[in-house]
Length: 246
Image (cartoon, rainbow, N blue to C red; front, side):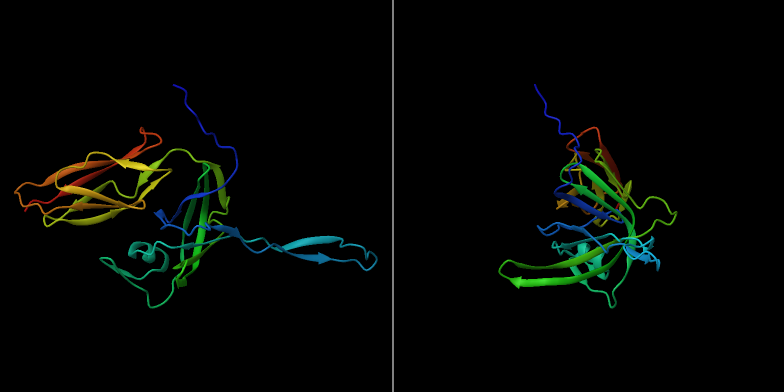
């Protein structure tokens, strides 16, 4: 059977996902994100005898890079990630004061490109928008690129290689059960392998929650769950599960 292979061709279009500090942002409005910033500033040196053009130009400030967009999936974990505050169940309470966050930013395009920004600051995030008609309320954000602490390259662009990662290797639950979020970072859609008895998995727009039922037995529960990249099933991440006995 013939197989069509789409190779990276350098064209960057569409938006698959944004990850800041290793966490996937919620869904972005249909306008996507914009890469903008201020132009470089220069100082021109003129000679009295030469009035047609400067004799030297010195850059006093380099151009800046700013990634802007609007996050419209306003569930509590997404709001906390961008704005801070407190999450209690499905309730989000806004912080008393605004905050500045700093970390890595990863952009996955729909045409097979990864953009890694090594150091960015999230300092312009606020609720904006409207309600009624086609208006929507969301979080306008701006991520400004900073110079890496080691002075190296600020960002890289390369073909997206198949990958899937999790921020934890194992989870422990009390006997009464509960729910814990897992941050899965992946280059595309992923599937869930078999789920052990007493546990379940909830996935909403790429956000993963593992739930444990109450354990009434005298024995601890153990098991593992695989998250498998659909585009390459050889790529998977396994999370070990343990639940205390009653």
